[in-house]
Image 1: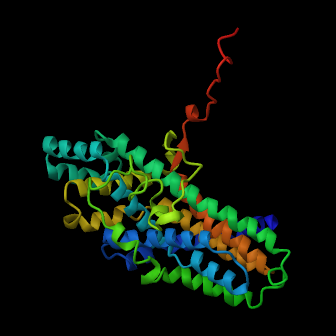
Image 2 (image 1 turned 30 degrees about the horizontal axis):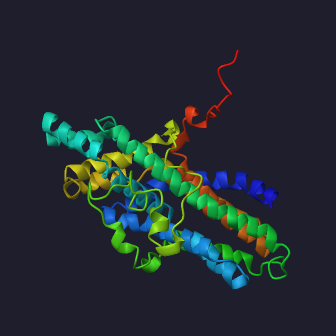
Length: 350
């Protein structure tokens, strides 16, 4: 199965080039203004499907098809906008950042600050309190990424174990039609009911209404997507300790800039009057390209698959792991965070 993933890479790179050539036309066609609340539901839909995939096991061919549909039914553009909007709402919960934005508006003028964040998204993170907002975003992204990748691990391990089951190690019938179905789902995006009714009310937040830095179970917190499931399903992301120290990955920092720029508009109650700017800000091209590459890898992996268990491998590697990697790529651990702490009696000798 490892060779299956390697085989598809060259074809995917070629397809990505063709897709990028078509991006301007697609952008023009979808130029209508984005509502932040609506945008967030696309990201919530993906995380809700991750929750469902973690809670279920593929016991037969029908279960595998359902799992494939869940990872495939997410549109890359909507997922991008949803993730950036989720981050913006998270950054808007930073007291220091919101105060910093409002102080800048009081000093330079509200219109001047609004103009600055819409023209140069990196301006917002440079304001007083920007580091606090950045830390919240890095912690949130890393936790969301770790959560998705943990489920990816489960499905890739499952793919290997499925090789011993007769239904899974048989040839997958109608594979071309299956791949076409998966492509169509990715183009159309998740249905309106993809977000459970108990989750939807918790997606509506206003600036400074929550404290994700101290309560990991609320919107933007490390355990939010687990917490909305309720009860015993709430689990801690073991690979993301609360005290972890993260820094911005420079190659993907633009996503954080865009999140904080929109959060700054929220702090100034300027979202409704700057809808075109918000729409542009939540459409981060690097994140979109990363999500698109993951989708193309999924399609190519499935196109090369012959047996059912190979589809399960493609699901875990590209439908989950690659998406989680795209999200987590904005954060890098500080070198000091990875330095072993000396134990008692181990130091002080020449």
